[in-house]
Length: 141
Image (tube, rainbow, N blue to C red; front, side, top):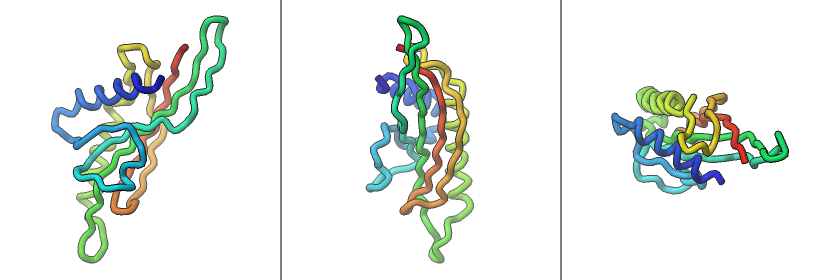
């Protein structure tokens, strides 16, 4: 039920990655807790259950929460600090991804227009810089 939406978002990011910003786009499965060879990467997660409500006798609708994890390796200096350039590059990728996905409507009708609503940034998580971008959409049955 969510795989078609995942594939549509992945294709939207891939089609718009003309500068080869990304080293990979994957379905989120706690990958940055393990070794990732190349960054930046984006992981696509659907963190909430789909709760369908009847809107007519024949139709049901559910809100979908979509979370993109923008992940970059946070290489530190000898004194343990992260250079500003690392943060700048990471945020540039996150802003780019937000702009590419915000307002996107999958052509296959898998969900309605995807709308950006939340930005949360972890400055460093076990050697990774992670930014969560959250979007909402609606899925019809």
